[in-house]
Length: 110
Image (tube, rainbow, N blue to C red; front, side, top):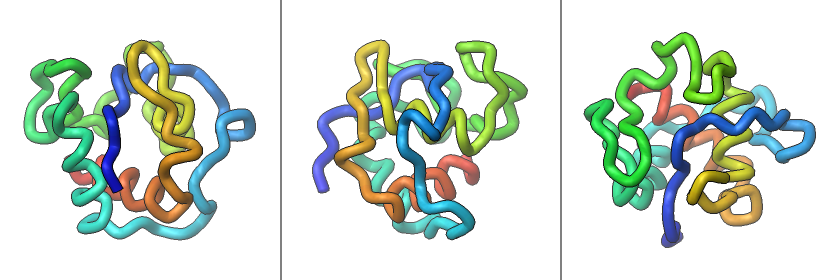
């Protein structure tokens, strides 16, 4: 699946109840998530915090807060992926629940 652009900033404070979330309780596949993220690499560094078009995501889940000030959690990151914003498209209708779980699993390894 080609992704036009990837998430930018990971800072939108939208709840999963409003945004639609990944399948609850089902772990993602890191390898599949890495493959999905390859399209995001146009805008985001995976191995650096250096900004491209969007922020570098290395250590994302080790940070205490997103740019929005929200705590870094599965829910806040998935909300950003689902709804987009600040130049990033929404992926709620592009990625399946399984693909979002896979992407989240990969982001946790950065």
